[in-house]
Length: 287
Image 1 (tube, helix red, strand yellow):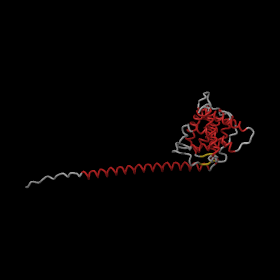
Image 2 (cartoon, helix red, strand yellow):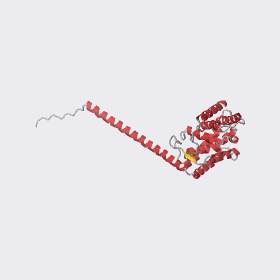
Image 3 (cartoon, helix red, strand yellow):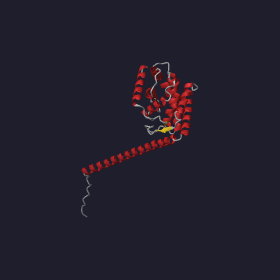
Image 4 (cartoon, helix red, strand yellow):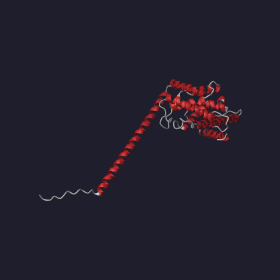
């Protein structure tokens, strides 16, 4: 029996091994990239579906004036309950007039807003939103629009700036007739002050487009701009925002609908004048 040489182990080719490793690494990277893209696509589809579903809900709701009126009534009732809890006098003429203004804002119907939500909807349903957001708005409005003894308090600054602008504007008009554009400028001034404060309240930012809110507030305030009970004093401003504006904001965010016509465009010159008036007023009271 002859001597048999042992079989020598095959020595890997370094170049081949490096190629295999590079290919495996590339495949892993490609697979990871595909998985990431799929996850992003799925998330985008889910977000779009949520937005589409929300808009479809809002669009169908806006077509039924009676259902909108009932929804607004529920929001106003919940808003009043929360206001009473924090010590706001809901039996006052101002609060009653503000609540009536919020209800009457929808008497011509409602409109659905495609751009109501900027981020994913934060509330499970409209009722949960109504309950949660209404309380957040109530607390926030007390903080940012109710006058306090301290002159530097945000509520004092905002309510004083709004009422001061209102009083000064009407004083400057005297007996002369005012144009719709001039009145809208005043409405824009008050709306700007309200809008800036409202966006400081948790649950608002990220849930509604700020420019849309400004248009809504400007057009809504304009329907009550001659009412001194609502806008003529700092205390009146606080109550007006609490009773009249808060339900409109809650309905916009929770239901995705506005009072009919509230999203219409505003004359640019009137808006610019109003914003300048508001900024001057805020500056005059220390902001």
